[in-house]
Image 1: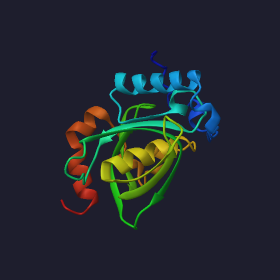
Image 2: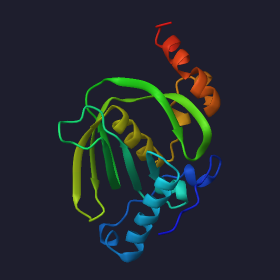
Image 3: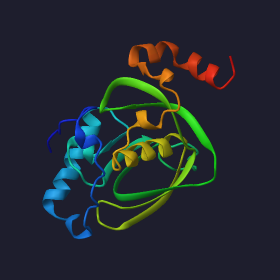
Length: 185
């Protein structure tokens, strides 16, 4: 496995819609090696998700390793998934605004509205169909990474750029700002 270079904000690779992965390519050794590299890069950078365009590869692939909200008894606290050609559909109308950052947008955080619950369909690492539901933070991470596959960054989803913060200020002031925005302070 090798670590891949992270593409940064401003590079055109982040703004291009990605091509689907042909199913016959999934089990090829070169593609499987790329998946291993993508996972290693995600873990090395302590991210919750990483999409192929973030490592300069214009393919519909992302890796998710995030906390699971509303988990059933016996379910793991963290979910790991490789999603190939993912499709996401909202479940219900509930939208939650919460903080997001991105490995491609260094040291910034902002408030982003996302669907609270989603249905996900994709191909897995073995080329077989996956279908599952995700909620809260897990759903947020998946939506964030799938956006990357369409050339969309979390900054594009923010309702108000006034919530955009440097990570040091975020750790000091984010709770106060979020409470004010929700009318609680």
